Image 1 (cartoon, rainbow, N blue to C red):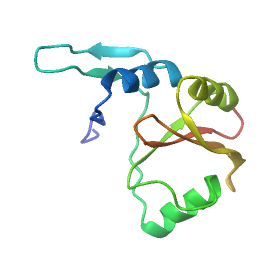
Image 2: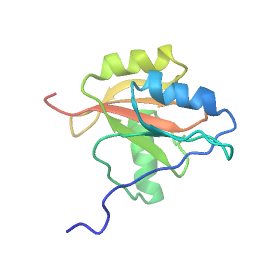
Image 3: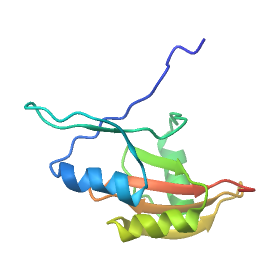
Image 4: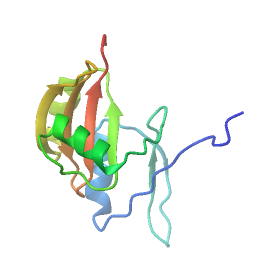
Length: 131
């Protein structure tokens, strides 16, 4: 049995409505739960299977160089596998994402594009080989 059953990433933002709208519309996610209360608001989006990648600085620099041409991401970057990269990229850009770099083919054959969310999170959208 796996020792971890679910991973949740909690993002705190000053502009809750804008960021919730970004994840809902730019990335096309449906809310799994919403928690409005007198203490604040939260929204949960299910992202499918989750993994954690741990990079050392040279690996992070290598991936940024492949996808963007230079080191630009912070200590945390999302990488989201999508079924159709061009459609996902167009939807994200139409809903407030900033294009960091156009799609590139990686040495392992995936197609990766880098965007930035309204709160500054670097996000790699990628389509796997053969999809």
